[in-house]
Image (cartoon, rainbow, N blue to C red; front, side):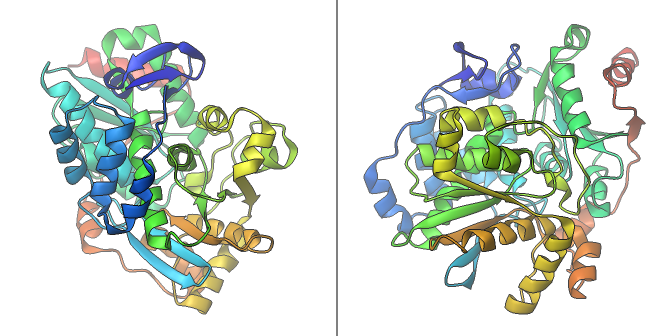
Length: 434
């Protein structure tokens, strides 16, 4: 398997290089040189396949021998030892629950797969990596759970001060050992910018060998593509299916488009955004203009300049007309999101977290003009947003015991201004003291 940079198609690397280095030096993003078509029989057989078997068959085609089959099977079994649940709300709307892993968020799929894959690549040469990850909530907790105590890896998490839920912050700051957390007095976009700047800073790169666990790392997107095939299986292959994805940094929906390019039969992908509607504005106008992020109750989607936009445009042909052929997009404010949480509880006796509620609103808009069945990709357990859920429904979702025990300790994070100089000082002070 070869991958290229979205800024230079002639800049090709191996899967190992792309996973361990994450960020091309030309500032682009790695993408597979080829997204092979899955054989037609796969979609006839899929209803009889377990999720791990689906993942393995996709990897066989996509990774094309980059990893021995027995190692790939072991990585898949170790990564996905938790269920995917599908709930039918009505005949035209279902919810695929992707939050039953260790951190109660869909990002467990990418984080655990990436941790096992990196560990495989690093173990023979005893190499070391420092993983930088910016989080607006769930990424950091999932990556911390995936990388905790993994040999030869330390993880540094950057999160925006006051812009994650209280429970999410506890999830970020409960680890210790090889996990380090930094609170940034700024936005998620500031955290993301600092990660990118650190990768390109020559002084830091003399002291650290960096990689990233954000969705800029292709190792996050490959496993996230698997559960779109599972959604197709659970929806029933006799119907047209559209998939609605809560979208912030657009890694999740980009993974879905990778599955689509490999042959997944989907009528439309619906990008549901909150008030951070950069992509929805582009979808409506054909003009892309990054925005300053604004704070919402669906905080993981508070991104004003989605990092995965270049990948999305590559997959869809880089033209507005191509985007509109396969995608739809709506944006929704906090008031409507709160109303949606209440509506779904009252109508279906079902709790949606704020991000999935944004997707519900877009699915409802979609059904005004389209008849396809819609699957909502539900990304986080409602308990992560207890205050919001309780204020909307009067119900306080219970925290599962495994999460309650995980967050029982709190390790105070470092706190810095959102500047590269502050970040560099902190990182270089660490190296000088060791």
